[in-house]
Image (cartoon, rainbow, N blue to C red; front, side, top):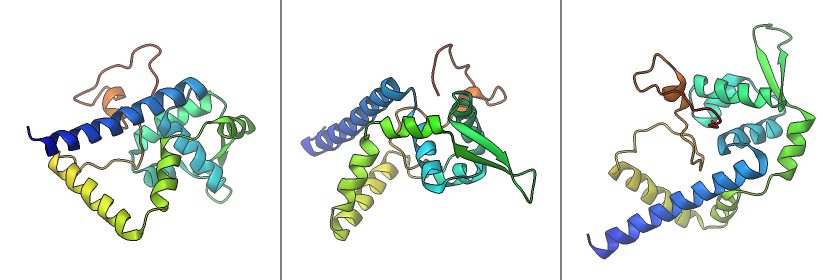
Amino acid sequence: MDDRTRSVLRAIRQILRSTEANSRVLMRATGLTTSQLVILRMLEEQEQMSAGQIAQRMGITQATTTGMLHKLEARGLLARRKGEQDRRQVWLSLTPQARALIASTPDGVHERFQQRFKELEDWEQSMLIASLERIAGMLGAGDLDVAPLFDAAALDEPARTDPNHEDAAPIGKGEVQ
């Protein structure tokens, strides 16, 4: 393996380690996964959303979204309200407990990246996007539909929790989604 290849692979591993460490810090501080925190922050911005809107905005399946929403609701972080015109529609919003938790959550790798990326010139942003998309393609991951999250936890949870899925494996006791 040549030096350039090693350098690229080392940089990829550093990114992975950073996101894994961030996920552990977040979990210890709040008991939330990165994906769950992103949902809470989306609801903080929008005031209320449907589960379908959350799934679409995060780029994840409805089943994955539903699982995360159930966990957040069980912790008393989400409130549900039926739609006024269409009673089948369910609107989700934050509870006061969720707002307090968000306010106490330390800035994570997403926030740091977003701020620093915004500070780059347009040509630098474009160069990074093109390079990373090329690397994703070289790794065979270019066609995967994934959410724009730095989350060490897999976002394909339905594959692990859906008993009808061919790769299903039960989640162990105490394991967090």
